[in-house]
Image 1: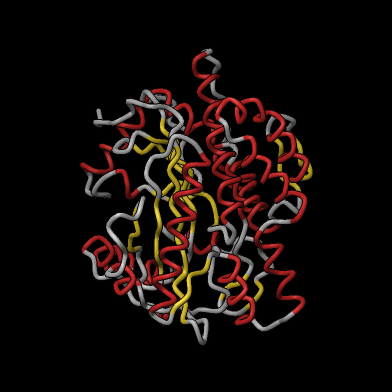
Image 2 (image 1 turned 180 degrees about the vertical axis):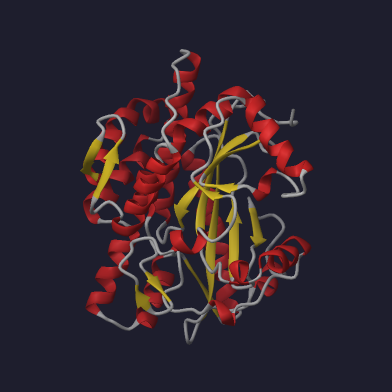
Amino acid sequence: MLEHEFNGPSFTVGVEEELMILDAEGLDLAQGIESILGAVPPELPGEVKPELMQSVLEVATEPCPDVSSAGRQLAALRAEVARIAEGQGMLIGGSGTHPFARWEDQEIVDRPRYIELAEELGWVAHRELIFGTHVHVGIAGPEKAVYVADGIRSYIPVLLGLSANSPFWRGTATGMMSSRTPVFRAFPRVGVPPHYGSWETYSRRVEMMVSAGAIEDYTYMWWDVRPHPNLGTVEARVFDQQTELEHTLALSALIVSLAHRMSASFDQAVPMVEYPTELIDDNKMRAAMRGIDGELVDFRRGRPVAAREMVRGMVDELREHAEELGCEAELAGVEELVRDGTGASQQLAIHERDPDVRALTRKLAELT
Protein backbone atom coordinates (compact mmCIF):
# COMPACT_ATOMS: atom_id res chain seq x y z
CA MET A 1 0.00 0.00 0.00
CA LEU A 2 0.99 3.63 -0.40
CA GLU A 3 3.28 5.25 2.11
CA HIS A 4 1.65 8.05 4.07
CA GLU A 5 2.16 10.72 6.71
CA PHE A 6 -1.22 10.51 8.46
CA ASN A 7 0.50 10.71 11.82
CA GLY A 8 -1.12 13.84 13.26
CA PRO A 9 -1.46 16.22 14.85
CA SER A 10 -5.11 16.31 13.91
CA PHE A 11 -6.99 19.36 12.62
CA THR A 12 -4.03 21.47 11.66
CA VAL A 13 -5.01 23.87 8.88
CA GLY A 14 -3.15 24.81 5.72
CA VAL A 15 -4.56 27.07 3.01
CA GLU A 16 -3.47 27.65 -0.59
CA GLU A 17 -4.78 30.58 -2.64
CA GLU A 18 -4.31 31.01 -6.40
CA LEU A 19 -4.22 34.74 -7.14
CA MET A 20 -4.29 36.80 -10.33
CA ILE A 21 -1.25 38.89 -11.34
CA LEU A 22 -2.60 42.04 -13.00
CA ASP A 23 -1.11 44.86 -15.01
CA ALA A 24 -1.66 47.94 -12.84
CA GLU A 25 -2.74 50.12 -15.78
CA GLY A 26 -4.88 48.02 -18.10
CA LEU A 27 -5.89 45.35 -15.52
CA ASP A 28 -5.09 42.57 -18.00
CA LEU A 29 -3.30 39.53 -16.64
CA ALA A 30 0.45 40.06 -16.43
CA GLN A 31 3.07 37.34 -17.03
CA GLY A 32 4.84 38.34 -13.83
CA ILE A 33 5.32 35.28 -11.66
CA GLU A 34 9.10 34.96 -12.12
CA SER A 35 9.89 38.58 -11.25
CA ILE A 36 7.68 38.39 -8.16
CA LEU A 37 9.25 35.12 -7.01
CA GLY A 38 12.68 36.71 -7.34
CA ALA A 39 11.71 39.43 -4.85
CA VAL A 40 10.04 37.31 -2.14
CA PRO A 41 11.99 37.55 1.15
CA PRO A 42 13.14 34.18 2.51
CA GLU A 43 11.82 34.87 6.02
CA LEU A 44 8.20 35.19 4.86
CA PRO A 45 5.99 32.61 6.65
CA GLY A 46 4.50 30.11 4.25
CA GLU A 47 5.34 29.91 0.55
CA VAL A 48 4.87 31.83 -2.68
CA LYS A 49 4.80 29.43 -5.63
CA PRO A 50 4.13 29.36 -9.38
CA GLU A 51 1.17 27.62 -10.98
CA LEU A 52 0.48 26.51 -14.55
CA MET A 53 0.27 30.03 -16.01
CA GLN A 54 2.82 32.82 -15.59
CA SER A 55 -0.05 35.14 -14.65
CA VAL A 56 -1.00 33.03 -11.61
CA LEU A 57 0.60 33.23 -8.18
CA GLU A 58 -0.03 30.79 -5.33
CA VAL A 59 0.40 31.66 -1.67
CA ALA A 60 0.39 28.77 0.79
CA THR A 61 0.50 28.80 4.58
CA GLU A 62 2.49 26.44 6.73
CA PRO A 63 0.49 23.82 8.66
CA CYS A 64 -1.16 25.98 11.33
CA PRO A 65 -2.67 24.95 14.66
CA ASP A 66 -5.96 26.72 13.92
CA VAL A 67 -7.83 28.84 11.40
CA SER A 68 -6.92 32.16 13.00
CA SER A 69 -3.19 31.35 12.72
CA ALA A 70 -3.66 30.43 9.07
CA GLY A 71 -5.50 33.72 8.61
CA ARG A 72 -2.59 35.72 9.99
CA GLN A 73 -0.18 33.96 7.65
CA LEU A 74 -2.46 34.50 4.66
CA ALA A 75 -2.82 38.18 5.50
CA ALA A 76 0.97 38.51 5.65
CA LEU A 77 1.41 36.59 2.38
CA ARG A 78 -1.22 38.62 0.56
CA ALA A 79 0.24 41.89 1.82
CA GLU A 80 3.80 40.98 0.84
CA VAL A 81 3.03 39.80 -2.69
CA ALA A 82 0.82 42.86 -3.20
CA ARG A 83 3.70 45.09 -2.08
CA ILE A 84 6.15 43.34 -4.40
CA ALA A 85 3.73 43.44 -7.32
CA GLU A 86 3.02 47.13 -6.84
CA GLY A 87 6.73 47.89 -6.95
CA GLN A 88 6.87 46.17 -10.34
CA GLY A 89 3.85 47.91 -11.89
CA MET A 90 1.42 45.07 -11.12
CA LEU A 91 -1.49 44.33 -8.79
CA ILE A 92 -2.75 41.16 -7.09
CA GLY A 93 -6.42 40.15 -7.31
CA GLY A 94 -8.63 37.31 -6.12
CA SER A 95 -11.43 35.69 -8.16
CA GLY A 96 -12.30 32.29 -9.61
CA THR A 97 -11.78 33.68 -13.12
CA HIS A 98 -10.37 36.92 -14.48
CA PRO A 99 -13.37 38.95 -15.71
CA PHE A 100 -12.12 39.49 -19.28
CA ALA A 101 -8.76 37.76 -19.89
CA ARG A 102 -8.19 35.40 -22.81
CA TRP A 103 -6.37 32.13 -22.28
CA GLU A 104 -4.74 32.50 -25.70
CA ASP A 105 -2.67 35.39 -24.34
CA GLN A 106 -1.19 33.43 -21.40
CA GLU A 107 2.20 31.74 -21.16
CA ILE A 108 2.99 28.46 -19.41
CA VAL A 109 5.43 28.53 -16.48
CA ASP A 110 8.87 27.20 -17.36
CA ARG A 111 8.84 24.22 -14.98
CA PRO A 112 9.06 20.57 -16.12
CA ARG A 113 5.75 19.49 -14.50
CA TYR A 114 3.79 22.29 -16.15
CA ILE A 115 5.50 22.05 -19.53
CA GLU A 116 4.84 18.30 -19.65
CA LEU A 117 1.22 18.85 -18.57
CA ALA A 118 0.68 21.42 -21.32
CA GLU A 119 2.26 19.13 -23.90
CA GLU A 120 0.15 16.18 -22.78
CA LEU A 121 -3.22 17.94 -22.57
CA GLY A 122 -2.70 20.65 -25.16
CA TRP A 123 -5.72 22.94 -25.58
CA VAL A 124 -7.30 21.60 -22.38
CA ALA A 125 -4.34 22.76 -20.29
CA HIS A 126 -3.84 26.06 -22.08
CA ARG A 127 -7.51 26.92 -21.52
CA GLU A 128 -7.30 26.36 -17.75
CA LEU A 129 -7.21 30.03 -16.84
CA ILE A 130 -8.87 29.61 -13.45
CA PHE A 131 -8.11 30.24 -9.79
CA GLY A 132 -9.01 28.14 -6.74
CA THR A 133 -8.65 27.95 -2.97
CA HIS A 134 -7.49 24.68 -1.37
CA VAL A 135 -7.85 23.87 2.33
CA HIS A 136 -5.82 21.10 4.03
CA VAL A 137 -6.82 19.54 7.35
CA GLY A 138 -4.42 17.30 9.25
CA ILE A 139 -5.85 13.84 10.01
CA ALA A 140 -4.33 11.09 12.17
CA GLY A 141 -4.69 7.69 10.53
CA PRO A 142 -5.11 6.66 6.87
CA GLU A 143 -8.46 4.91 7.39
CA LYS A 144 -9.85 8.01 9.08
CA ALA A 145 -8.50 10.20 6.27
CA VAL A 146 -10.36 8.19 3.64
CA TYR A 147 -13.52 8.22 5.79
CA VAL A 148 -13.33 12.01 6.18
CA ALA A 149 -12.75 12.53 2.45
CA ASP A 150 -15.66 10.20 1.64
CA GLY A 151 -17.84 12.16 4.06
CA ILE A 152 -16.96 15.60 2.69
CA ARG A 153 -17.66 14.25 -0.81
CA SER A 154 -21.44 14.58 -0.39
CA TYR A 155 -21.03 18.24 0.67
CA ILE A 156 -19.16 19.25 -2.50
CA PRO A 157 -22.18 21.02 -4.07
CA VAL A 158 -22.96 23.26 -1.10
CA LEU A 159 -19.25 24.01 -0.62
CA LEU A 160 -19.00 25.10 -4.26
CA GLY A 161 -22.18 27.15 -3.99
CA LEU A 162 -20.83 29.08 -1.01
CA SER A 163 -17.49 29.74 -2.71
CA ALA A 164 -18.90 30.67 -6.15
CA ASN A 165 -16.87 33.66 -7.33
CA SER A 166 -16.48 33.46 -11.10
CA PRO A 167 -19.55 34.79 -12.95
CA PHE A 168 -17.49 36.22 -15.85
CA TRP A 169 -15.48 34.55 -18.61
CA ARG A 170 -13.76 36.41 -21.46
CA GLY A 171 -15.61 39.65 -20.70
CA THR A 172 -19.09 38.12 -20.56
CA ALA A 173 -21.44 37.39 -17.70
CA THR A 174 -22.01 33.68 -18.33
CA GLY A 175 -25.22 33.25 -16.34
CA MET A 176 -23.29 30.98 -13.99
CA MET A 177 -22.07 31.79 -10.50
CA SER A 178 -19.02 29.52 -10.95
CA SER A 179 -17.78 29.66 -14.53
CA ARG A 180 -14.56 28.13 -13.22
CA THR A 181 -16.38 24.82 -12.75
CA PRO A 182 -17.12 23.95 -16.41
CA VAL A 183 -13.65 25.14 -17.48
CA PHE A 184 -11.96 22.77 -15.04
CA ARG A 185 -14.26 19.87 -15.97
CA ALA A 186 -12.29 19.44 -19.20
CA PHE A 187 -9.32 18.14 -17.19
CA PRO A 188 -9.09 14.41 -16.45
CA ARG A 189 -9.44 13.12 -12.89
CA VAL A 190 -11.32 16.16 -11.59
CA GLY A 191 -14.69 16.79 -9.98
CA VAL A 192 -16.56 14.42 -7.69
CA PRO A 193 -14.17 11.66 -6.52
CA PRO A 194 -15.02 8.00 -6.14
CA HIS A 195 -16.23 6.78 -2.77
CA TYR A 196 -13.17 4.76 -1.72
CA GLY A 197 -14.37 3.23 1.54
CA SER A 198 -10.97 2.15 2.83
CA TRP A 199 -7.29 3.00 2.68
CA GLU A 200 -6.60 -0.32 0.97
CA THR A 201 -9.04 0.47 -1.85
CA TYR A 202 -7.67 3.99 -2.28
CA SER A 203 -4.07 2.73 -2.34
CA ARG A 204 -4.85 -0.07 -4.78
CA ARG A 205 -6.63 2.24 -7.22
CA VAL A 206 -3.85 4.84 -7.14
CA GLU A 207 -1.20 2.18 -7.61
CA MET A 208 -3.15 0.72 -10.53
CA MET A 209 -3.15 4.08 -12.32
CA VAL A 210 0.54 4.66 -11.63
CA SER A 211 1.59 1.19 -12.78
CA ALA A 212 -0.52 1.57 -15.93
CA GLY A 213 1.32 4.78 -16.77
CA ALA A 214 -1.80 6.95 -16.52
CA ILE A 215 -0.36 9.23 -13.81
CA GLU A 216 3.01 9.78 -12.16
CA ASP A 217 1.57 9.84 -8.65
CA TYR A 218 -1.65 10.56 -6.78
CA THR A 219 -1.17 14.36 -6.96
CA TYR A 220 -2.31 14.12 -10.60
CA MET A 221 -5.78 13.14 -9.32
CA TRP A 222 -7.30 16.59 -8.92
CA TRP A 223 -10.56 15.60 -7.22
CA ASP A 224 -12.72 18.17 -5.41
CA VAL A 225 -11.68 16.50 -2.15
CA ARG A 226 -8.88 13.99 -1.71
CA PRO A 227 -6.58 12.36 0.82
CA HIS A 228 -3.06 13.81 0.54
CA PRO A 229 -0.78 11.06 1.90
CA ASN A 230 2.50 12.98 1.53
CA LEU A 231 1.18 15.80 3.73
CA GLY A 232 -1.03 13.72 6.02
CA THR A 233 -4.08 15.83 5.21
CA VAL A 234 -7.48 15.75 3.62
CA GLU A 235 -7.57 18.48 1.00
CA ALA A 236 -10.74 20.29 -0.12
CA ARG A 237 -10.16 21.65 -3.64
CA VAL A 238 -13.68 22.53 -4.79
CA PHE A 239 -13.61 26.23 -3.90
CA ASP A 240 -13.44 29.15 -6.30
CA GLN A 241 -10.70 31.56 -5.22
CA GLN A 242 -12.08 34.14 -2.81
CA THR A 243 -11.61 37.88 -3.20
CA GLU A 244 -11.84 38.78 0.49
CA LEU A 245 -9.63 37.05 3.03
CA GLU A 246 -12.53 36.76 5.50
CA HIS A 247 -14.39 34.55 3.03
CA THR A 248 -11.38 32.24 2.66
CA LEU A 249 -11.23 31.89 6.44
CA ALA A 250 -14.98 31.21 6.69
CA LEU A 251 -14.66 28.37 4.17
CA SER A 252 -11.56 27.06 5.98
CA ALA A 253 -13.46 27.00 9.28
CA LEU A 254 -16.29 25.16 7.56
CA ILE A 255 -13.95 22.47 6.22
CA VAL A 256 -12.00 21.88 9.45
CA SER A 257 -15.27 21.75 11.43
CA LEU A 258 -16.71 19.29 8.93
CA ALA A 259 -13.57 17.15 9.16
CA HIS A 260 -13.83 17.26 12.97
CA ARG A 261 -17.41 16.04 12.83
CA MET A 262 -16.55 13.26 10.36
CA SER A 263 -13.66 12.19 12.56
CA ALA A 264 -16.00 11.89 15.53
CA SER A 265 -18.33 9.72 13.43
CA PHE A 266 -15.39 7.53 12.44
CA ASP A 267 -14.42 7.10 16.09
CA GLN A 268 -18.01 6.09 16.84
CA ALA A 269 -17.98 3.57 13.96
CA VAL A 270 -20.89 5.31 12.20
CA PRO A 271 -21.32 3.71 8.74
CA MET A 272 -20.58 6.09 5.87
CA VAL A 273 -23.41 6.46 3.35
CA GLU A 274 -22.20 6.18 -0.24
CA TYR A 275 -24.20 8.62 -2.35
CA PRO A 276 -24.17 8.06 -6.14
CA THR A 277 -21.60 10.13 -8.02
CA GLU A 278 -24.17 11.20 -10.60
CA LEU A 279 -26.44 12.61 -7.89
CA ILE A 280 -23.64 14.62 -6.28
CA ASP A 281 -22.46 15.82 -9.70
CA ASP A 282 -25.96 16.93 -10.70
CA ASN A 283 -26.19 18.84 -7.45
CA LYS A 284 -22.77 20.36 -8.11
CA MET A 285 -23.93 21.76 -11.45
CA ARG A 286 -26.94 23.32 -9.70
CA ALA A 287 -24.46 25.05 -7.38
CA ALA A 288 -22.26 26.16 -10.28
CA MET A 289 -25.28 27.68 -12.00
CA ARG A 290 -27.01 29.38 -9.08
CA GLY A 291 -24.57 29.37 -6.18
CA ILE A 292 -26.68 29.51 -3.03
CA ASP A 293 -29.45 31.51 -4.70
CA GLY A 294 -31.25 28.41 -5.96
CA GLU A 295 -32.10 24.94 -4.69
CA LEU A 296 -29.89 21.96 -3.98
CA VAL A 297 -30.96 18.38 -3.41
CA ASP A 298 -30.84 17.45 0.26
CA PHE A 299 -29.75 13.80 0.08
CA ARG A 300 -31.03 12.98 3.55
CA ARG A 301 -34.50 14.33 2.81
CA GLY A 302 -34.47 13.17 -0.79
CA ARG A 303 -35.78 16.43 -2.25
CA PRO A 304 -34.62 19.90 -3.32
CA VAL A 305 -34.43 22.60 -0.65
CA ALA A 306 -33.32 26.21 -0.69
CA ALA A 307 -29.52 26.23 -0.70
CA ARG A 308 -29.46 28.92 1.97
CA GLU A 309 -31.56 26.69 4.23
CA MET A 310 -29.11 23.85 3.67
CA VAL A 311 -26.16 26.06 4.56
CA ARG A 312 -27.79 27.33 7.75
CA GLY A 313 -28.57 23.77 8.84
CA MET A 314 -25.00 22.75 8.14
CA VAL A 315 -23.61 25.62 10.23
CA ASP A 316 -25.95 24.74 13.11
CA GLU A 317 -24.69 21.15 13.06
CA LEU A 318 -21.05 22.23 13.02
CA ARG A 319 -21.16 25.03 15.58
CA GLU A 320 -20.13 22.85 18.54
CA HIS A 321 -17.26 21.42 16.50
CA ALA A 322 -16.11 24.92 15.58
CA GLU A 323 -16.21 25.93 19.23
CA GLU A 324 -14.05 22.95 20.17
CA LEU A 325 -11.56 23.92 17.44
CA GLY A 326 -11.62 27.62 18.35
CA CYS A 327 -12.87 28.79 14.94
CA GLU A 328 -16.45 29.78 15.78
CA ALA A 329 -15.73 33.42 14.86
CA GLU A 330 -14.49 32.41 11.41
CA LEU A 331 -17.40 29.99 10.93
CA ALA A 332 -19.76 32.91 11.54
CA GLY A 333 -18.42 34.30 8.26
CA VAL A 334 -20.43 31.62 6.46
CA GLU A 335 -23.61 33.27 7.75
CA GLU A 336 -22.31 36.55 6.28
CA LEU A 337 -21.97 34.86 2.88
CA VAL A 338 -25.55 33.64 3.19
CA ARG A 339 -26.82 37.05 4.25
CA ASP A 340 -24.80 39.36 2.00
CA GLY A 341 -24.18 37.09 -0.98
CA THR A 342 -21.22 35.15 -2.30
CA GLY A 343 -18.33 36.65 -4.22
CA ALA A 344 -20.17 35.98 -7.48
CA SER A 345 -23.22 37.89 -6.29
CA GLN A 346 -21.03 40.79 -5.24
CA GLN A 347 -19.22 40.83 -8.60
CA LEU A 348 -22.53 40.94 -10.45
CA ALA A 349 -23.76 43.78 -8.22
CA ILE A 350 -20.59 45.81 -8.91
CA HIS A 351 -20.96 45.16 -12.64
CA GLU A 352 -24.61 46.24 -12.59
CA ARG A 353 -23.58 49.61 -11.15
CA ASP A 354 -20.72 49.97 -13.65
CA PRO A 355 -20.67 47.62 -16.67
CA ASP A 356 -16.95 48.23 -17.36
CA VAL A 357 -15.25 44.88 -16.67
CA ARG A 358 -11.94 46.68 -16.15
CA ALA A 359 -13.50 48.69 -13.34
CA LEU A 360 -14.73 45.41 -11.84
CA THR A 361 -11.23 43.94 -12.07
CA ARG A 362 -9.73 46.96 -10.32
CA LYS A 363 -12.31 46.60 -7.56
CA LEU A 364 -11.36 42.94 -7.13
CA ALA A 365 -7.73 43.98 -6.69
CA GLU A 366 -8.72 46.60 -4.10
CA LEU A 367 -10.80 44.10 -2.11
CA THR A 368 -8.04 41.48 -2.27
